Length: 493
Image (cartoon, rainbow, N blue to C red; front, side, top):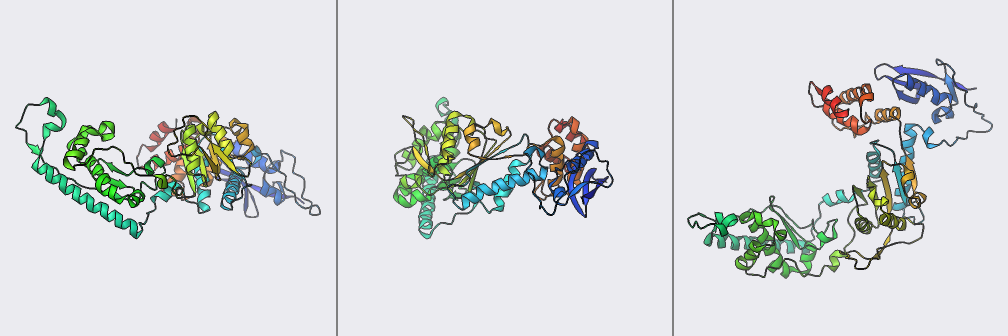
């Protein structure tokens, strides 16, 4: 015997739902079309929960559709596989969750023949990125960006070299300040010395204020070229960075050359700020400081062996997130530097639309047991990159284009999760995530509900219906402005 649900309308939230024995089988937003949507999901047998409970109609709604076949206990229940466009909103995100799970499990368990990539599509801001990142975090994976923020503890040996660098910085500071006390720089001399005949300008002594001194940022950099850099000075913040890995191998070079080199940039920024724009700050002013103040050759670059640093262990972290444009060579570098990780390309369609890039990805995601990626170009300036390497990672593409627009070789190598939603389904999805603390964190629920109601009321005037447009309205509604509705309307129209 078939069962009947109750069609309910909540006037406070303006939503329709099908309720059966305390369970909500399907829910939608307000309006006659939404009411018909709930009725049709049950009558057409498109609601998985209703099918499992043998619910085929309503006690208080007309039968406009043929009921689903009654459940036969003798035959058992076999759920029909529905095409993606017939899945509910919740079911589509469940599908996305499962696909992300499959990719991550294959990576964590090092299944060489497991699934290697996933294509997530759906026009507009539907929370694809947020949802995917949350799912990745549920697995305890750490992004390379987050890993960089984790403090790197120096070993006792590294700390000893770091202390040497700090002592040398104090020495160089004392040398420089003493020199400019005895040889003050004319104020006009910094900008107009060659054009001025006035010898009565008051001279300026030097005072150096040293900011943060960091010993970990360079050798943990995501950029290989940065990792081979001996040191850096940052004007404005007066921050210094020194590559402790290179310093461990070349302490004398750091004492004699690298520390004075960076401190010369600091002096230059104080006395000759305009000259920083010339030759990366290695102009005549910097050269004079090196040779006259510190008495050492004005070499722009070090000559230390960087082999060990270039071939250092991969970047810390479990997955790497890429957003925006990527050239083919940039993609090659990204794949190399994260060759054992999960790489998430978000709205980075250039990574697969370019023919060269598409071929690199095909090699990275191939079904071969070993996936070798090559860059065979004559005159290739490797910039620390090999011409060939083994890729053992996984890839997730998040895109606003239809999956059919991806190159066929990538489609055939990937799982696919399409969460394309109608406007009505988008509102349903927004209602699902509205109560979450992770959606507009810190905002009272009544403000979020007020913003949702406003967006729904003015949906026909909105240029875009998405979680992003809802967030915009929430921010305006939470501003406390008496004119927030006018402001919100002008921002969504």
